[in-house]
Length: 156
Image (cartoon, rainbow, N blue to C red; front, side):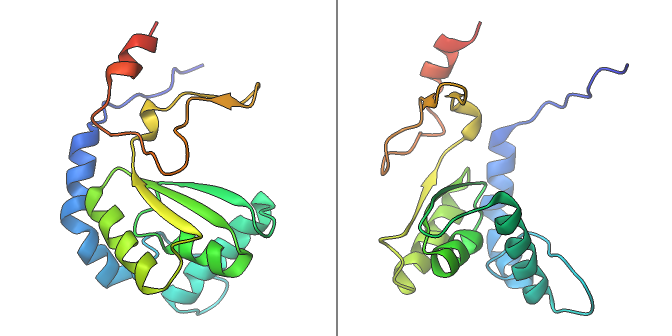
């Protein structure tokens, strides 16, 4: 059996990429900077909605659920979940530029009570799913992507 391939990932380079190019991604793809699910000759916008519809269905997201959107980008999926399912969504991105863009739209469309965005590096979070306990910060307090001190203490 082959060992999994590992790549060195520089979060700062990824953050810089999204900080520099998010405006262009939004211009090309709209608020959903993910791909879509095509069944026929749908537009990109419709295919993106179809992808979210299928993922929400597969995930079994109930109405009024609390959703954590890791890698939320510009917030398109978070806005859609808030509108379509009346969810409360916390979106996380490593890009301060994406978070600002999402927060600006959040205010413009009046979803401040349902959607919030934070700059956070999920790689620094430790979640124990078996016990239901976690070190996730309380709502409204993000993990600063520069705060590696707690993470360093936990490494074996």
